[in-house]
Amino acid sequence: QVQLVESGGGLVQPGGSLRLSCVVSGLAFSDYAVGWYRQAPGRERELVAAIITRTGSINNADSVQGRFTISRDNAKNTLYLQLNSLKPEDTAVYFCNAVHFWTRQEYWGRGTQVTVSS
Image (cartoon, rainbow, N blue to C red; front, side, top):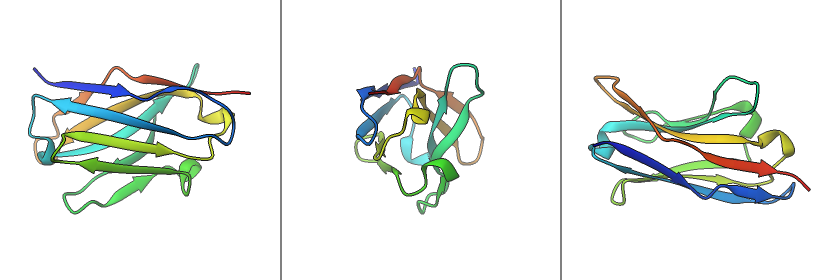
């Protein structure tokens, strides 16, 4: 059974930092492009950052460029997102995503809430 389990969300003040983790099981993690998406209330889910190739090419949303860093540890089957200089508009549920490089089979986690507020 494939599972993507996010953790690390929480309440943080503007300017603060968080580190999200996504532990993946039940699939060959290194065969998947992986990424983070977010969805704020009343808005569509949007890409935050993704590692899209085996060599580690990264796509970042313009809104998080220079503030968020995505990384993966294939030995630990884990995806990370370092969130720095957080803003209230970063408040959302953050979801982990995995897409097979060839078959495009896709999996989602259930999400972790990030709230940025003073």
